[in-house]
Length: 217
Image 1 (cartoon, rainbow, N blue to C red):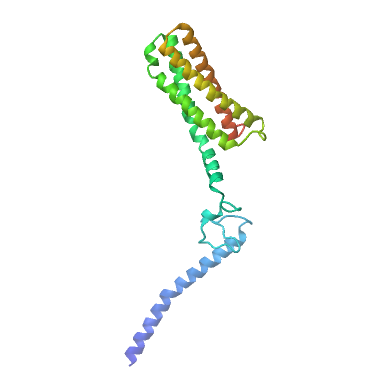
Image 2 (tube, one colour):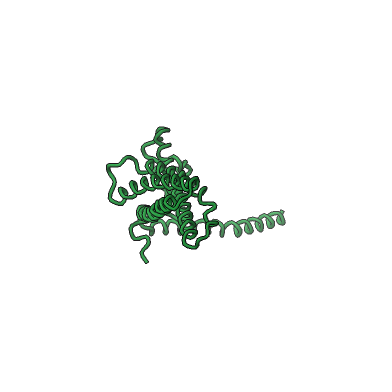
């Protein structure tokens, strides 16, 4: 009997010696967390990235918190979604118009017509993508009337670029079908003006997206 009591006592001592540091460490963590929360400024977000607010369940669906006014009708959601595609869509006409202009100018100055072999397709794609980008831009900005100066210039210069792009495409087709010096100069002139307008409007778009001083050196 005495041996059983001795073994039981040893087991109890071992159990207490193992569990006591764990409870002490847990209590220490709780105290440290309480001190950190008390020392944190109001409104600070903890390391986990989610700040617990009074009455807010931590396991709630954060996707439902995106709009205070509740879900929007499908046409309005589609309208906003199309407008959100505008910043991505503008990269296509910008790149295509600039590449086409560089190739045409290089072919004209270097007298190497081989450089223009692919510009017919490039101009067509640039004009079509410009019309699509402008349409998405109108979805993004809505109807005119409340534009500031930068938005006003960006809107109407972008719309003009779509028209100039279509004219450049038409001039290219006319020149290809009926070659002539006059048609070539008209096409090169329209394409150069379009490319210059693309650069200016790209800068305006950058100002709207990143601020007026985004290109300051």
